[in-house]
Image 1 (spheres, rainbow, N blue to C red):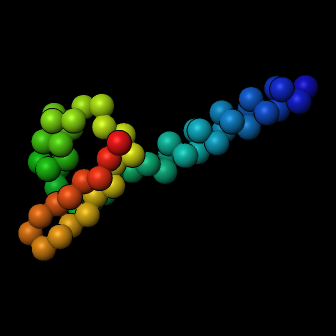
Image 2 (cartoon, rainbow, N blue to C red):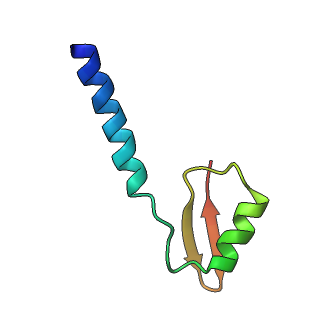
Length: 59
């Protein structure tokens, strides 16, 4: 029973964490699409705006 509860807890945490991963609305769709084409397997993307440039830090 403990294993079932532990597995269910991990699944719920993963589901909740992914539900909060929304794209930044301040970054234009054109910039995001270009990034996705260049780096299709990128994960944990964080966007920053520096004056006239957008910076993405990712794994």
